[in-house]
Length: 460
Image 1 (spheres, rainbow, N blue to C red):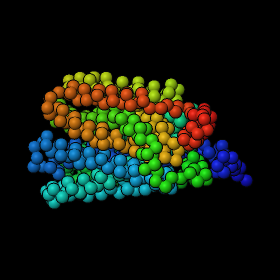
Image 2: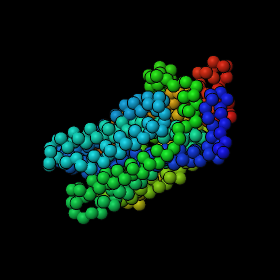
Image 3: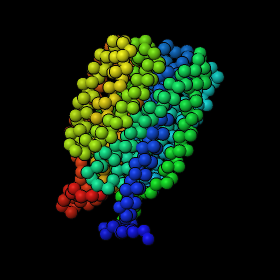
Image 4: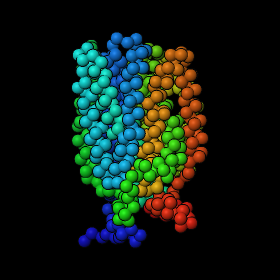
């Protein structure tokens, strides 16, 4: 007979220890696989933007103008992400993490699949670019709701407070995994001879995304809701309008979370998206060199993201993040010094190393942001804070980098922009609270009313 216990405070049913560990593993796998699929879809679009879209959908524009136009469509996905955060954050705090994550996966996957069938300018003129813009917006909405749910699904199953940073870092693993798969797919199809890659080869990876969606859907249908959300249901603590409520109660935490991400968002898309245009058109590097370098960088992050997530459990979330932010700010100058040599070996090394300081902030970032919000508003608050950075940093980054280079004709101007983002993030993180190894199961406002921090170091 299965041994089940009841939480004395909430009446919510608790699972035996062995089963709870099994469910935690499933939740981590589901979150990681799901984010991998979502980011494969998102990065696939990012990679193809610099290689294909300017040529196919803006063929009559000057090369630089065409690149800017293609990146404008690319930026639409980032503008859409806060809308997805608000929409799916609402349902994530209302109906649960699991059901909401199934919705984000389907929305993102079907939009990406549809990109494969958008006709080029030669067939339908500017309407091709219009269709791409609509599908990119839908992609952004899906991604906007994905991150918060995946992180909470993993983090809220963590059995002890002492390992929450490590557990929460695994959905972050989906970023390099998705980046790896997207670039691998494009690299494989780019081996097609002649003009076939531009004609039809680039479409194949988008078509294959539907297979990944089916796998992710199967995994997510076989996990349980998190114990923390089950407790909120049992205690009747579900907010009617969680998105509006978190904006009213924790506006500072939302804004600080967004600004804290500037040092991660802007440099990442410069190192992995803008670099294709810069490397191929300005430095004369080969497409395969750039794709291979990004592949190697993403493989390295397979190790470094959970590593720095684990270190944040040991030395504190804020401390780890601020060390990483400073490293990113400085590395930008070394990055452009190496790539501007035009030496393939130095270009490869610069791109591979670029994601190490990125991992120093991205590893602890999930727990740092999610822990900032009280449980009943956590999906909405964490998603809004995380995705607002897409508008102020991620989306504009390739555009700003392209404009800075067009004006100054120097990569060091872009490095200065990266440093400025690091300074903003350092100040934001300094102003944030640190909930490392503290209890996040009790509602924060209730804890204050009882006269304690509500974050005693005991298992969640």
